[in-house]
Structures are given as structure tokens and as C-alpha cells.
Image (tube, rainbow, N blue to C red; front, side):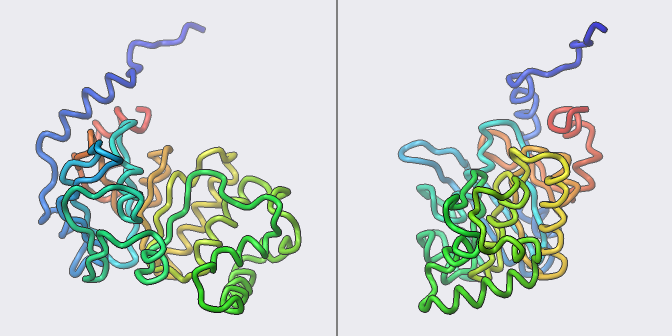
Length: 275
């Protein structure tokens, strides 16, 4: 069968057409309406990047406590840079990041985790393969004052996730892809963060494990009240999960709406959702 390629957009096509969306992005009032009263996470006019290179150009973000947000956009739009900036991995050229009314813009990552309650879940396979599942969880509490605190937190996680408890004494390298991602998420929970930064949770996973990971994240939001900011390569899956969706283009915020509204938006569907 001959494949119809007439409607397939190249990467350059997507970037060019997406740039039109960014000509008049949402106002801070628009973002405030989506986040509700007293947003817990408030980014105002953020300019950030790496070394001398600016990637983000005046990005705003507002998110209410217990809400979830998925960032989508073309490659190189700055999605992961937003997460990196919140956590302290970038150079901040201008703007402010406030969490629960506190300016955390220039706090280093350790302070973001220990003092501000922000945890970062990397997109890479970040478990320690030769350590046991239990030892990996203990490592999540490396900033705690006493080792016993990490062990107590690990026990709470084993109670919440029996699947990990059954494998607590086994090396992490024997876990399935989905179990490794569960361990990565669980290790981030040891310090009891309020905000989770989740970078590409589905990357490298089989479909059955992708569903499992999103079920875990949904439970953390709905049952535990976690606030979640996510970058997800599968934009449709991410928007189905998230309360809110932002479209980033060339380091600027182009669109903001509920996840459902972006799923139904014809331009978003055509450029980022495969139809």
C-alpha cells in the first residue's frame, strides 16, 4: 500500500507553524484563571538557559496546589528547561520563581528538595542498578539528618507499593522498565515533596507500563495532593492526564488551557498530537 505523505509535517514545518501560535500568548490573568486563587507555583517573566545561551524568553507559569500541568511543544521549545530552571539546573538571567509565596529562584537543587519540597524525576534511567530496591529508596533520603528517617520513609513507600516491597532485597537491575520507573518515582517521594517535576515519564516504556506509570501519577495527585509539572513526549497521553496544558514555542508560552481544551484544539492536534 502506498503511504500518503501529503499531510505529514516535517520538524521544520511544525516549528514554523507553531511559531504563529506564539505571536500573542496568554496573559498572566489568563494563567491565574486557570490556576485558581493563590497559585502555589508562580513563575514570572523567566529568562533562563545554559552558560551564555538563553533558552527561555519571559516564560510565565501559574499552578494551583494539587493541580497537574503538562508542557508540550516542538523539539527545542524549552520544555525541559522549564523543569531544570524550577529545580536549579540552569542559569537564571531574569524573572522570579515563587513557591507558596517564597522566592526560590536562586536556591540550589539540594535546597529545593530539602527546604522547598520540590523533587525532580529524571527522564533517564537513574536507578543504581547494583543496589537493592531498598537501598535505592534509602538514597532518596540522603539529605535527611538521620539514616533512620530514610528507612522509615522507605517502609511507608513499601506499604503504598507492594510491588516494590516484594522486590526490596533484589538489585534494581533486574526490575522491568515499569518497575524501574516506579522506583524512580518512589525514591523522589522519600523526602515528602509537595511539587513533583516529571521529565518524560513514558520514555522507553512499553504501552502497558506507560499506563501503569500514569495511574501512579494520577494517584499521587488525586490521593496525596501532589502538584505535578510534567514534560511528556506523548503529548496526547500527557494532556489526557493533566488538568492544564501549556504550549511552548521557541522559549515562549504560546497557549495555555485545560488539558481537554488543548486535546480538542485543531492546531494543537495537527501539530503535536498526530492528527
